[in-house]
Amino acid sequence: MPADDRFTEDFRETREEEVIGTRSEVVTGPVADWATDFSHAEPEWAADPYRIQDDLRQRCPIAHTERFGGAWLPVRYEDVSAIAYDTERFSSRSIILSNFRPPRELAPVGGSPPISSDPPFHHDARKLLLPAFTKAVVTRQEPATRAFCHSLIDKFEGQDVVDAAQDYAQYIPIRVIADMLGFPPQDGPQFAEFVADLLEGINLPPDERIQRVGRMFDYLLVQVHNHLDSPRDDLTTYLLNAELYGRKLTPDHVVGAMALLLIAGIDTTWSAIGASLWHLAKTPADRDRLVAQPGLLPTAIEEFLRAYAPVTMARLVKQDMHWHGVDMKAEDWILLSFPAANRDPAQFDRAGEVIIDREVNRHAAFGLGIHRCVGSHLARMELRVALDVWLERIPSFTLADPAAVTWSAGQIRGPRALPLRIR
Amino acid sequence: MKVRINPERCQGHGRCYDLAPSLFGEDDEGYGTVLSDGAVPPGREQDARRAELNCPEHAIELLEEG
Image (spheres, rainbow over the protein chains, first blue to last red):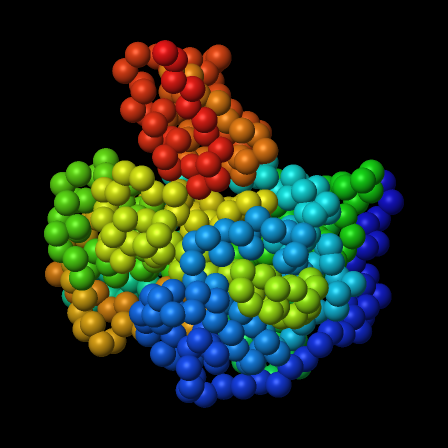
């Protein structure tokens, strides 16, 4: 078999040269009016986005901002779902809203297929990943995940207060995805940095941001070469061997998909576990009920996913158009807030309340349409196991200091500091 | 009562096979499948309704027999 020469120095240099695109002026600072100047990167949004979204839903269902080179924020379920389904008018070429728009020629593949891909390429790139993430396949990770959760709680021995975000929630998805990709588990802290650079660094100067993202690609290339030298049964080797249209994947596709799998599963699941524990710490009635009735946990998890949906996506408008009452311009961003859709009273009864035995729950936490989160079954398994083990081991816990809880800004929302009193 | 999945709408969220595993399964890519011929056994009607009411894509159809 000829050596795999896709990942040579040439590839690396080409990647660096390819960073062309459109940069917009970085605008930060307090928001004047959320309807005309919104920014999900500001601390006020991080502190409580729901109040802002509820207000916008009343007076201006599609907010706008000149920041980020122009962006729109729909907050009704109806508008969010229409955009999610309309891949003709809204491109996924870049799904992280920032001050850098990648070149249009990047469509329909995008930088991290399939999340960044549009039809028809999207379907084929997605099909490659789906078999690795079915419920049946991810269930095989459950025993190891459960054992890992127990080992994290074992380390709490002797402590009265622990940080459930830093010392528990964060580690679980990092460990699971490192195992699946075949990366060294001790590299976990680096993954957390990559995630922060990519998802929270949106208002860094674009070139600094590009440089930071480059560090992640350097890391991924090391892993690629390691797997080329010693192939094994993991997702990295799978992607290296995968074929599309009768030939192996392009190097950009392989590394982009690896980046997607690494990044997309970490911050999101970390956030969902943390937000659920935060809710239970401040709501003893729900906590006690789940301890007494563990069978209710899967239903409660769906409600936590609805009410505290961690993930907001982005789209780019393809052409100038009048859409649902506003004039969108080509290349305007859409901040596609599944969390806002999930709290629309037109779609959900008692939308602002957390009802852990909610029977009817068509929430959109994992998106809608062709881009449904590929890792949703994995995320649900991790969330269920993480909460199940926690409630079994630590049935009684409270917020140690409500004022010390901090939440991430940007498109992924979850607690980043969550001190809990556990005895 | 019979259940049916509209393959044009199903995106593999898996709510149906989570909530009603006696009626629905998953294929090799995670898309929902109807087990057997879709006829809902007596006593399973509530499971079928829960699956239908929790599908985010509105992909599940219930056919009530008269």
